[in-house]
Length: 62
Image 1 (cartoon, rainbow, N blue to C red):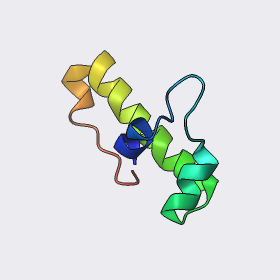
Image 2: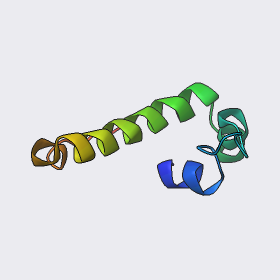
Image 3: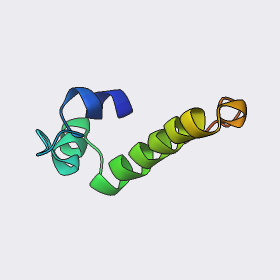
Image 4: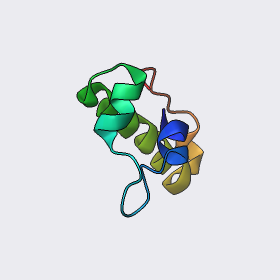
């Protein structure tokens, strides 16, 4: 989902596609999209800012 958001321009400014549009395309609620996106962002931050522990942390919800 994180890769999809990136490829669809979710992180561009201004956004190419919104979270609501991506959630709709995936057939899920926007809150579910946001939940999984935050999990992926959390994992990325852990890998970048705490690489010794970031790789060991997994979130089975994203």
